[in-house]
Image (cartoon, rainbow, N blue to C red; front, side):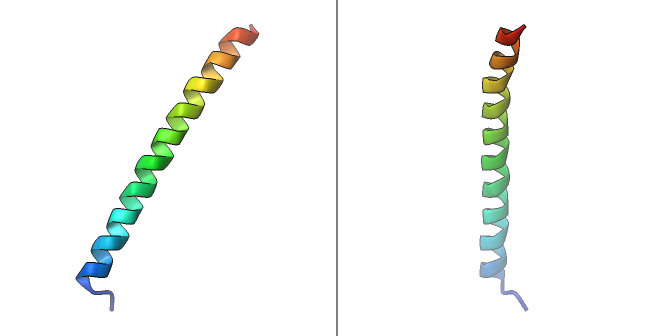
Length: 40
């Protein structure tokens, strides 16, 4: 059984991964969006 401290750490890690993935995806969309507009 996972204790509460471990579960809180896992929840925090999951949230952190989600936030980082969201920021990276946003940054990629901004960069590639500019590239796609420039190519037309």
